[in-house]
Image 1 (cartoon, rainbow, N blue to C red):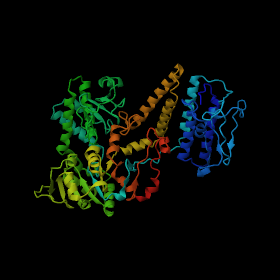
Image 2: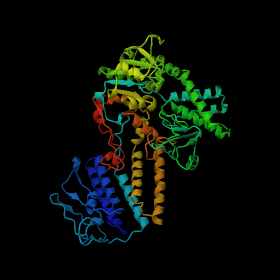
Image 3: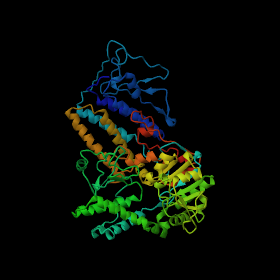
Image 4: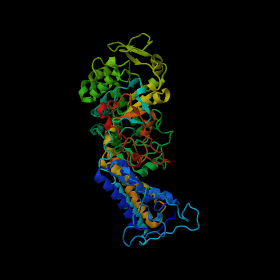
Length: 638
């Protein structure tokens, strides 16, 4: 089909109104299904996108893509009649001309009739002459044409998203990166901190304040740093820190820094300065980036929840030196802050705080108890591998489950020194007595009810015989808990991501759905019409580009004003998100999510379309809100 310079805005408006009329009729009769809404939206946008296609297309394809089927009543069954909402460009010459100032006649072909043969001269059909097209409307200038496309699309996006379309998204859902059948899992393994035991955010403030004190008293840093209070929502998990430059930033899955997410101290760094610092690019080379365990030579990634107060203290200390114009070495600062945070753990401060007030710091204890009871009742074998000391674990497990908590586990290993536990094949197991003191006998078997210290995974596999996909291990740290188990040993892995609870609330909001859908629609409009490169069109595209950037910032700020979502940059997955999909078969907000599922349930990953594939599912065509339509049906399982 050839590009037609002059088009009637009246004709395009009438087609849009026809599709909206169908939508309103159905919605008045009964609440329109999300699939129906998406079908109307998709076909209408497809039709409007083909008014000025960059390449010639077959009229047959155009008719199919612009059909607007009517759904019958509440059953949403297609009627035999199909209304033709095709564009003027698809109507052959010599047909009925529209009445002056009125709508073109709406023809409904019977479902029994065969499709008419293409007229000679149509594109893709052999013949002598080509179709000619006429229009009674006055020619439209280029600027008006682009803005009419923009306004029609914006009206469709806002009118065709039903209120509450995303309400089915729920933080109690378990999400699958890989297919996992719980029926095939016989052995369940657990980390302790932030897995079996979920901690309140008040713990982060205590870690921050105590480490800040060590920085001043032990490392002799200026007293002025003491005035900085803890900032609860300044950072998010998964950020990278450039050790030599003293910059905190978010990097995507392709090693690119997300613009607008680079901070020196507590102040943002402009995109121009970032480009200057990194040699004219936002890319961080693999040789400088974090290694397998998140600790590169020049850049470190903060992957666990305990690192949030560490990132905040780094930002605060940098800010103090910068605002007071004091010369310092960012490398020394990073080393000192890391040691100060480590002293909080090594000296046992964190363990002492939690044990002194278990009710204040430990969350979801009843749900952890319910999960363990359920698994034992089903005849599953359980084991615990944690880096925490026995006295701390014993106190917490007794609080959550009871004094007989060891009866639930077939093997308990403390102070395991993960991730080295999974790669070291030399360090032996040591048994602890009931007082927590080390015994000296050689370990020839791992017995139920006993407590073991250190050891290594190779001896663990040899002594238990627990191998392969019948083992499912839960942990919160993608590197220390999960990476080696999946890549080297073939265990099933489950990541605990507490941030899902906050992020799903944001994604479920109507404001987010409308903003994101319009952002995607505007991006698609710019992609389809970018062949218009005259000066007038460039001005319009400049306005659209500005709005697109504003929408991207708006969606980012809904999650966190500084760094946005832990899962996404503007359009790519984050470095954290890519590792999450690589090292975990399933992931969830908390261990209690298991209570929502039958013990024989199979988790299926959503088949998201690749870039070269067509989006055939409505949750991908719109905003991804219908990920869990089954959740209401499973509410009775708990």
